[in-house]
Image 1 (cartoon, rainbow, N blue to C red):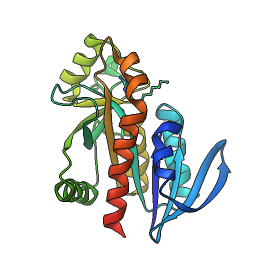
Image 2 (cartoon, rainbow, N blue to C red):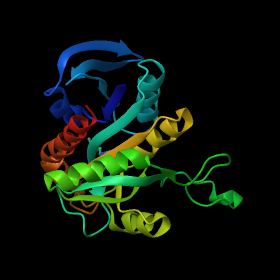
Image 3 (cartoon, helix red, strand yellow):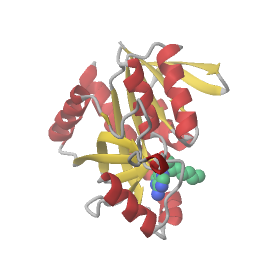
Length: 229
Ligand code: 4EZ
């Protein structure tokens, strides 16, 4: 069983690498991939760079080139739901692309022909995550994650995403990874710790909490690996 773990930024995967043994590094399609061992599990780890296009490329390489059979994403997100505070964990139940718009042709936001507005996360990985949260007494929220190629620091846009998709959190890679994994039939799990509230202060908060929230997310992913071995 080979498991892919990806983030978008170096800060999101660095805390993961510190747990790994026998790390070997490879370059594929202009990006660095780390194959490693964690308690007998084979893993491949990489950060994609920010945004849906880079995320799709990395997820595809992890599946097609490195033969990953499951994919876990670890990173940070902006909160939409007021119940999500900085440092809180949210696991995506389903994901959508908030910036995908061919509504001029009568289609709903987030939809293109032969696609779907929402991609569902793998039920088994979600179940495993809930078990981990229960055992370790960690608060893990579940909800809809909206993805787009925009850093949202704007209350109006945030409210629009909330009302259009019923989203609880937003970021810039999750739905892209979901589309790729869904197409390859690879079970995936998208975990994010909140770094900001996608509001006026989002830029400042993001910089302030990127490191600490990335670590919260990465530590939870490690606990999931502990349960998979
Ligand atoms: C994208 N990631 C942010 C990357 C920002 C700046 C150099 C997560 C994220 C996010 N995305 C945290 N807060 C966000 C927000 N308010 N809007 C979009 O996945 C890179």
